[in-house]
Length: 254
Image 1 (cartoon, rainbow, N blue to C red):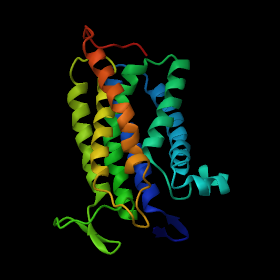
Image 2: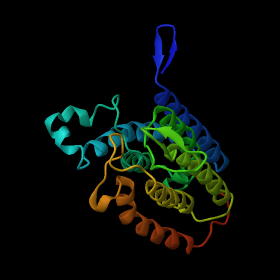
Image 3: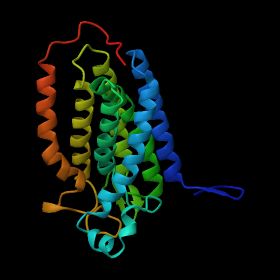
Image 4: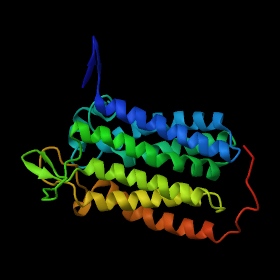
């Protein structure tokens, strides 16, 4: 908590908001470079962010470990001001809402989401620092020198690992975005890389302690469960799009 006079600011909210702002700025620069409408990008982002906030809370509240409490107190599925959000839930609902808007507003969907993918990495890199400072997502015990003393043991700093993953996604997106690839390949590649990378990091998350992330079937986290089904689909789509002829030049349609 940061206190300035009578005002109180939560570190997590500040850094997540900052991450969204940085990500949107980077995405708008990428979109402008391809002649895409930044006004429509901002509208799409606003709709996607609102849907993502409620979607991340709803999917978290419906996990097996939480559903009993949710059924007893249904309002908690929408109480975004309280703890309990899952990024993968936000991505699913946010992407769905943004896709509906893009279709109705006649946005060039695949190229717009390619631009958004460029800003996704910076958003994760900055936002996850807030998770680290708040003590979210404790890791398993480790003897590595960068472990943090937390909840009675020296543990992997999972949010910082994911912050590094976000930086890596930014580099990947930039490299792909500068190439003349079929529309949609950048967005799908970043999405697939994030799901796989996050699923591997989830192997280092703590299990069986009070603040550990809930587990689903087979002891998998929510992200790992989604990745099992989504990764093959994304991989097939990437191959399918990559085999299509590359664009002859930059597309300026909005």
